[in-house]
Each structure stands twice: as structure tokens, then as C-alpha cells.
Length: 486
Image 1: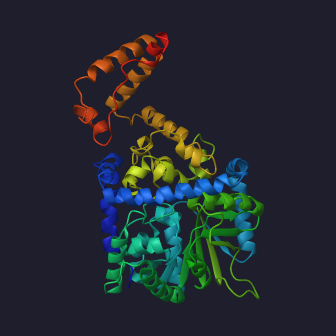
Image 2 (image 1 turned 90 degrees about the vertical axis):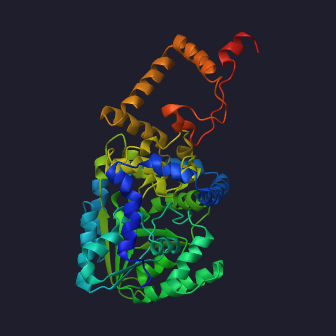
Image 3 (image 1 turned 90 degrees about the horizontal axis):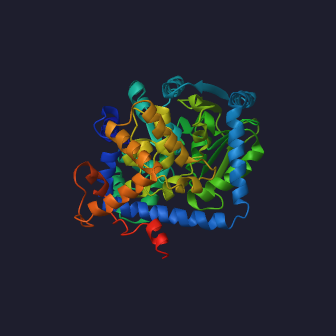
């Protein structure tokens, strides 16, 4: 069996999530280690620079990009305002085509449904296409633990996800799961799986992966995918990928299961033309992804491919509680990863520092919303509030505003530290009073004189200079220069 033993993966995940669960270690501690990891920095810089350059090029060549962005926002807004109706329409359309629909309140419901289905079918091998929804509910680990008597072999078939699975690791980016790994590390992982030393050559490693994964494709009893979009009008599920694995997962096994967050719905099939044009450009800098698949129910009479059974799991897992709130816009996300690529915080820390399935600005927003502020209270502060994420978002989600609202919520709920509360109240008071502002500016210029640029600040303030330069304050303020006529 090529997949990593469950115990090893659990151990890795337990170490990574230990801080969030225990409260001992949070984003700041994990980020501090990541900032000092030069190999991680090099990998992130290479990936994000290429992604951002590609995105900018293809969007600049698309004159109607701003209009598409506005349309995408309005479509999502309409969908969330009528989500109950569209969910019913989606379910009716799937069932009319011979498919099965299950509404999962949370991850436990989804895991139970799939586990019971595997038991009913006598399944032994399950192949999976890349799915953030199944990562969110830790589907692999839970199936291995809760249904251990079935001896299930669960195989990720996206190349990056498969390598992460073999390494007992978790994805660090929505689009590039193993961008934190270099070629040497990938070669080590695949060589261990092969039982022999493989050359650090892309073609050789890819060839080995294809051989091993094809064995799983042809023997799989159940195929599991996520969904980029679900069309309420027709009951269609759209999967948009750059590898052919999703087509094999959805068509070769006799049973196909889709785990889809309820926010992935769009009302009409024509709406897909808006999102498909934006998703590839924003996520990978392509005009169109290599494989854009539309699946509407199980294989019909006279059709040559497709699964014999089709199961759609519409998963809530905390999403519905955001409807009608000031945080509803977080549900508009189409998981392109563009906000991660431009975020100055993510580009320094990588994805694992967030301690969550979702990282970057969108992760800093939805993780506290889905899991609770107490469990992820550091994340809303993992942002410079520069607004780059909003500018890059193909749907126009104001992530910086949502992060500020989450910070306000922490203060209202008493989750903010007393020192932090005092500091920001002092800052607010100073910024509201010109006299205090002028006095503080002068005091700051005097206080910095004994400090050298490369010397850390004393006491608690040292956290700022631990990973940042401290530029000196100007000798004269803008107002002073203005009065002097300069």
C-alpha cells in the first residue's frame, strides 16, 4: 500500500494543529519559525511570483475583466440571498437524473455517509480528486479511524496532494499543495514509496507517479471529488483542474461521490461562463484550465462513460450561520488562491503557519468564522490590511474589511488581550487629538535616538523587530515641512 499509514499522518497533523487545540502555540509562533526557513521562502517566492505575473498578464489582456468581477459578485450575492431555494432546485435536478443527494450538517455527517456507503458497496480502494472541502473535514483520517474494519485504501490522485499524503503532510496552498517542498524533498518521498532511489528528474518522477496512480484508478471502487461549482438549474457539478486525474476519478469507479460546500452553488448554467473565465486566470494565470468537466448525474442509457451511481453531499459545516450576517461575503470565495499569492504575510510564512486547511487572507477570515474565534483568534491579525487581497480577488470580496470586523468582534467578546486593548485605545485617542499627535511624534523622534536601525526594540516591543526592520521616523513631519514652505 503506497499511502502513508494513518498513525503517521495523525502524528504529523497533531503536531501541526497542537497549538490551535491547546492554546499554547498559535499563528505567531508558527509564523516565527516559517520566517526563518529560507528554503520555504525560496519556494513560496518562486510560486507566487510566477502566479501573480501570469494572472496580471491574462487579466490585463481581458478588457471585460472588471465587468466579469462585478457580475461574479452579484451572482454570488443573489445565490446567498436565495440559497435555500437554489439548494432545493439543485437536489431536485440531481435526483431527476437518477442521482442521490444528502444534506450534511457537518463533517461528521459527510464522513458517516461515505463510510456507510463504502461498507454497503464492499469498497476497498477509494480514489480522490483534489478537494478542499474534504481536507476541511479531514475525510481521509476520519474514514481510516472510524471505518478501520473495512481496511480502506484512500488515495489522493492530484500529484501534489498524493505527494503530501505520502509524506504524511498537509497542503500549504489552495492551488499548489506542495509549494513548500523542493525537488529534493519530493524525490525523497517518491523514492521511499518506490522502494528504490529515483533520479531527481521531473520526467522520471512523473512517470513513476503515473504508473502507480493508474493502478489505483483501474481498481477503485469509489471515486470522491469536490466541486468548483454546482448549477442549481441543471444539477450539474463542475470540476476545473489541470490534471486528468479528476476525469478518471469520476468515470472509472462504479460510484462517484461529490462533497460540495453549499456556497459553491450558482443559479444558472450560463453563470458558469463568468466564473470559469475568472477562476483559471486568477488562480494559475491561464486563459482556461486544461480540464473543465461538467457532470450531471450518473451515466445515462446509451452513454459511454460516467459512474453507475452518483452521490452529491451538500455540506453546511458552519456555512449557513454566515448567511445574512456582515460576514456573508466570505461565502463568495471560489478558492482560486489569488489572495494568498499577493498577501505579504502569506508570502513570508507559507500556509502551514495558519494551522488550518485554508490559509492566507481567505483562511484568516473563514477559519475563525467556521471554527470559532476562540480557536483561531490569531488569524484575523495575520494581515497588514494593505487591501492587496481585495484587489486580487476575482469576486471582489473585501477581505481587509472582514478582517477588521473580526478584530472588532474579538474586542466585543473580550477575546483581545488587555495590553492590546490599552494600546489601541491609546492609539485611537492620539489620532483623534492633533495636540497629542504632535506631542507623540516629537516624543517618538527623541525616543529613537538611542536605538540603532538593526537593534531590536526592548521588552514586548521586540516582537515587532524580531522579523522586521524599524525605519527611523523623519526628523520633521509633513506639517512642519509645509509650514517651512518646502
